[in-house]
Image (tube, rainbow, N blue to C red; front, side, top):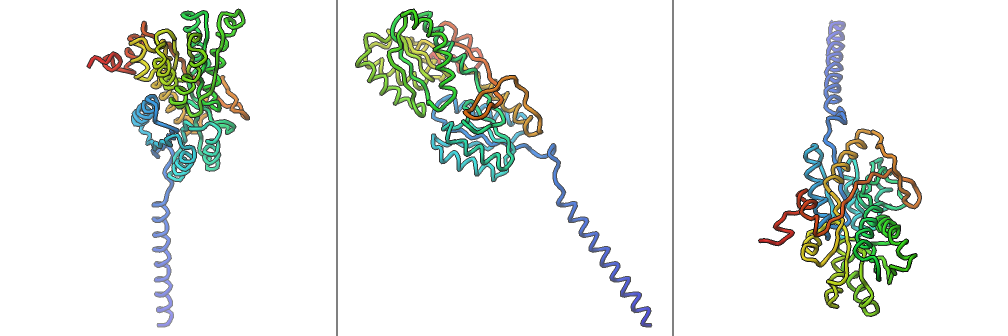
Length: 349
């Protein structure tokens, strides 16, 4: 009797152990890790600003392209506030992004954003503005040296003699310096021959249009009769310069070049108020960036033969070609590509 009772207790205990192990196994299956290839990729797209027309376009095209590739995108706009951008990036990292794409508000300050990502082993793409001294995984932009060359080549062809003023973008932005170097490569021979004189030049922190206006307005007190051409870091700065030239009633006598093919710049071109803008096909930039995002997510090496020094490190550099836009070819460039509509450029409605 006692033995029978012990046997039944032992059997009951064995049954309990089997049930416990069975439940344990089921729990373990429920917690299995989802393979990376089955997980939806999440990209954090951190923009320093949306104040210029082109950055709004970057955002919209990026979201559209990512959706086509079944990629989730978290977008933040720092509204030209570096501290806010840093906080936004940290929030993105806590949300579990797989890749960080950053267009820095300040190329120096936002190195802390890259550092925060690297601490979590998240790859970083510097988008159209290179974060300084940070060793990002890759820098994807346009050929900014070529942008400067295009501006200077057009202006020297149409204004081979006279005074030039240069209004560059933020000095700590590598794009500004590359544009300047490209322009000076073309201008130097004209300067050496005494045909062209640089009347004045400056850098505009934050690429602020009003600052470009103030600078040009001040310069016109001394150079109103001498200035024949102005090279600007982008179309927003060109807008500020043209406003000052218009107030001085000499806008029609001075050729101004900018870049980005902003809608208002294209409208100024067809009305003769701006001589040139440089069209940077954002669609191509976005497509390449999304492609590289997927490569980094899969742990693949990004292939490029080009490198650019960020102040400390030589980082892989992928660049997209650009194109001059004037009154003569605007229909065959930005309008043909669908970048702007004909009726918007010519304001026919």
